[in-house]
Length: 258
Length: 269
Figure 1 (cartoon, each protein chain N blue to C red):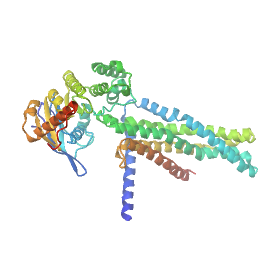
Figure 2: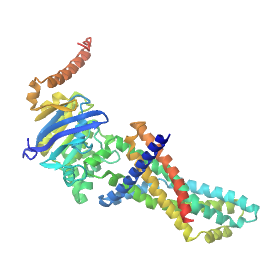
Figure 3: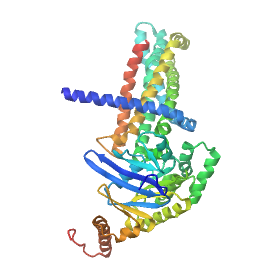
Figure 4: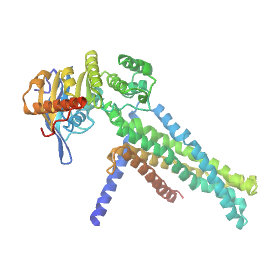
């Protein structure tokens, strides 16, 4: 038992170190990488434009549900005028950064892991190395740099759409005065909340895209499978690990910032 | 032979590679003359691809020395290694083309990423390489839209666009029929003469390699069993060479029998 525990700990420490080196190497390679802007724009498109529909849909439904649930709870205490406060703080502080990150992991992260896994399998990554091109700088760095900006932007969009959803269910369907709703939103959200929201979003972006890239990049090291199955396993692992890390990091950041 | 000998481009000494308990390369010595087509022959599983990947810096050997143009390549990111990579190209068995890039973008990739050439010049050189390999009309095609032979030519265009001095070919004819195997070797020989690079080919196609190469080596069970001119290989009575020649001849004979519809000779005979 003790031996097993020791082996697991060593393995995990080694994997964490390897992951940290991978992320560090990717950022370092970006300094020397040529014509990086074009690839960052491409990553912007993958994480931004392609993920826009899912962010909009999940954002509006989250706002609608928050508006409904919040109204019935607050109405019991005769405080339905605080609906804007509840919806905005829930969204800005917690729900928007977490849910937006999970959606981006599901779409852009899984695509990244699968793409890198296939590129590893078909020797495209080895081909880059033989050309003297850093595969970290060429394939990974643009995605990580884009994530630092795209995740906060998508989160901001999620908040805006969510607030509008809350207003739809609260004001339009349940009769809360629209002016009261929006003035409560304005009064509730402070600069510190917005800052916290963006810090979370950028951290989630960096962590999740690094995990997805790392899993895809090392798909060939999968012990339990090879070929297409290894790509599938690494993609699944990327999504599961990223989702867990988002929730764990959310707790850690919240406990430090609140 | 000394590593600094002027006619040598690549000198390999005591190369050793092991995967777990399995020794794939054991004390391999080899000299590759500049401007030649050098084929490393051997049966499947002899360690040919591992040998090539160790030379091309894709795999790290456990022991041994590699000198390129008289410069000893150290381990890790040494300037000599960076210089070596700049002057070499690798043509993969699977071609390793980027499927999300067009033919022109695939060829331009090494120039865009390793040189400071202006974009119009990169485009001109890439188009030139495509033209040389008769692929100019396919510049906007994606690799999946090209035939197997065209993909091979595209991979060669990408390999030579940086004007390398040494090109590694990993089983360039794997999975091709005899006619196409012949065409690929003809293509390598033709462009080697045109561009003057040194070609190091690992293959198990004896007939084509003997015709196209200036020198051949036989790698068997991780060791070099023979090095010499193709004519010497054909007439060598060394047991390791004879066995390899006999095994490939036996395979060709049995294929002929299958084509004729005659009963196969016993495997043991």
